[in-house]
Image (spheres, rainbow, N blue to C red):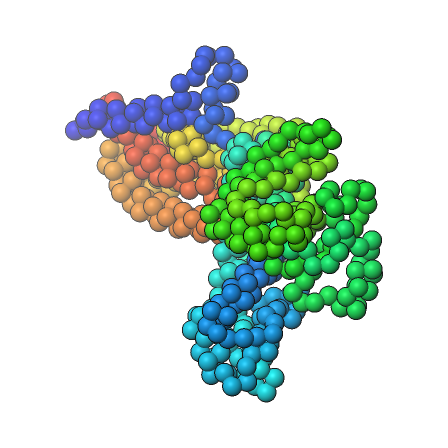
Length: 542
């Protein structure tokens, strides 16, 4: 009895048309270039095919820990007097090696219990409190769980900030994600980047514009030795020496060393907006910045209480300006100096996108040229086409007329795979092309399983229709089993792999899903259609 296949044939044609739309969309013409543009708009090329920059970055988490404990030092200095607890100093004894430790010295001997309760109640959820012996010194140590959480958040915030900066630079389909296992590293791949040096500067710039109180000479010192001599050879733990070519008090263009308070007045996320300003009469350019409400209030409190004193504007760990405080300032400020137009644009841009929570170091940097990418595409396409043609010829020779069935299924498999990628706007990489080739091999494997099973049924004396039915009935379970296990493996590669490995996993999963459809459904419909048109007693060409 002949089967009615009209519905199934319409379903196959519908899937084919939908996938063709996923690959090409609606081209703006039918020339070779128009079709090529239509494909590349829907299927993006990865770094290894298009060219661009490959970076591996190291997040210096210690900077974020320092910033967190610096803020706590400032809070302790404000909180304890409100609780009528006196002290001589609050500082970090070893900010370089152990930034998670804070010491409070000089509390009243008779108030040890009150001090412990106050510190535990206010900070005990995040810090272990110890001390309070004969020397009246207390130690706050960041808890390991809090430190681990801060480490994770710092890397995540760095990824978000870098992604925001890259997106605003207009880089399409970037890869920005964690790299390695517990190494605080970030992988950045930027396809199509034509100015990698500028992008690197934008990404690496912490843009930590901070304002610090000046403790030493407002004009700075000529060298670190001179600065240390003025301090008796030791820098106090709550102060820091920074180099700079200040445009404020000193304008001689020479390098100076300034002694500043370690904890900034404002900085980092206190900045809400920034805009470039044009050159003034002396040729200096600058940036206007606007502080958040909280940052503006702290800036106002400090400047109103320190009129006549000096403050330093620090950018990238260098002093850029030293100015005297003439009056209270709330939420607006300005930095100017001998900057280029590009430097000013980059500075205002990075301030608007937010400061990185920690310094970024470059571990690895590679640039892939567009010509290499074009070569990879050419060689990959040649390999895929040659492999597919060789397989199709083999199927025609070995399975005779039924080989046409396998070849049609393979062709549709490739169309469905590319359609999947077009609809999902997936990025095609060189390993992705390898995934396509592997999918072709998996497709052939499925057809071989089915065809050999049909041959066995024919040898057993069954007719074409019954042989096809039994062949598919016995083979499809094995096909599904092999595909599901491979899909699970590919899913693990996608979850834990990096960019190129993920590209391979994506095309492999899409290809396997397409192969299940073509091997079990499409190939069966073709066989049934062929059997419908056979005369009674006519053998199946397989």
